Length: 212
Image 1: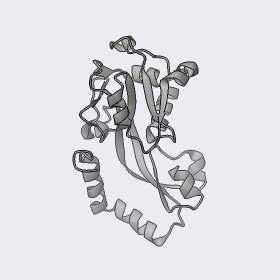
Image 2: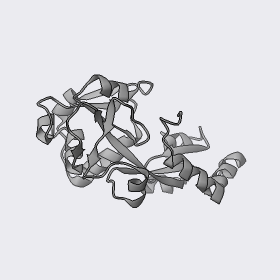
Image 3: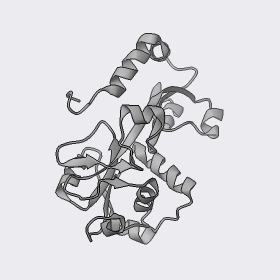
Image 4: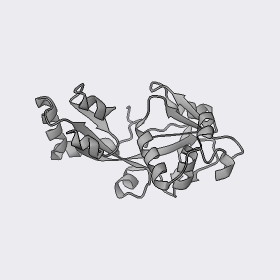
């Protein structure tokens, strides 16, 4: 959405959780990279599963694994919560599924995927259903849900920076070369030492517990 809005001239700056495509670059969109952000795979705290391999995660979101017992959990169908308008992790998980060469089970996904409005709290849905799973930026958690280890690694500031956690998105701002003077000043600030310091503080803080 960020790229499209900027490209149409409806906004000076947009956000992007992937790299620009060659076509977007050719259209004159400029990317200002902020940092990397890990996306947690989140389940109900009562779910006995504490860890998945990356392959298992991808097969769950591709509909190839449909029951928790297939990954060491209870004999219950897996329900996948996704935002109906699309979320930033969609590109991340879709590209990972494609790269791994995993075919989607569309029939299974039609039954397994539950859509939530962008205004709804996905974690509240997870709290209501022990069989549910979703993804969210690692900042977000509550006392009724938990982030799974993926390949033995928990999502954290350290694991997203050193690349050991496998589900990490590139976070950037996108703009046009002819954007407003205010936008140009803001982007210059973001690139400055003070701007970079504030970005690091923002990515390192616990947004939920510190009052996001």
